[in-house]
Length: 325
Ligand SMILES: *[C@@H]1O[C@H](CO)[C@@H](O)[C@H](O)[C@H]1NC(C)=O
Ligand SMILES: CC(=O)N[C@H]1CO[C@H](CO)[C@@H](O)[C@@H]1O
Image (cartoon, rainbow, N blue to C red):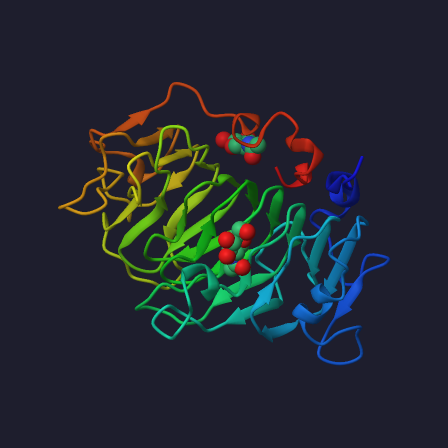
């Protein structure tokens, strides 16, 4: 098998510390490690090497824009943590301050972490775009398939997570933003056991599936949707999603929805361009104040939850770290 089975690697470390580098890791810290920046560690890997590579990052704030080129081998990036089972104890921060307004060539190039390769797993790192309100400013541009994010924190305001291409999993993650903060055009994303936090009124998802044949599908499973800690948000001012393109496809299932979610659930793209004729906006088994009310006519309630293999394929266990499910 070409790729390492991540589940074999980390099943035994879930819910415990990862404070020393897994053997064979390239290490990153401000001084005394192999490299002082995350980018230098990634760039030290030959793109044509088919080996599995590990990078271990010690506690700290790394202010840089990191690009992972297409690699022929798999890559696991581990952040130092005293609790691998969650983002809550993360002490590794990768942050960058860039937006379209401040000069990026396009939205995807605003991200702190961009264009990852196939077969990449990221553990226990907070990835932040610190630009704030006012322009598109991505934390993570996820642009390839078989990407897993485990105990990762994603922080932004507008367009925090670009889930653009391929099959991707986000498990026990934290995703923060206000405007269209989970968005993209072609990816199939499974988000599970995570916390999605809104800092202001707006739309959580903005899926850009533009035709009935595009594979894009976002499923948010078993997650908690509410306001950012400390934010005062008026009830009913946040929507599960709006359609960036007319075939947008998103499901929230078995989630806890706080009162910030509007009773209609879903929103139009804009009043002049609603984009709702062909959307697939689904819910199943949601609970909480935000799960009640008369939903938008262009949304549907499912009679059974969607399964992970429906979204990520029957071979998902070959690359997903199933200890996080
Ligand atoms: C989906 O959510 C259910 C809880 O409703 C949970 O038991 C299950 O493990 C989740 N599935 C995956 C594959 O994440
Ligand atoms: C940010 C970035 O480098 N994006 C590139 C990711 O890969 C796609 C497909 O090869 C390119 O079109 C993007 O420019």
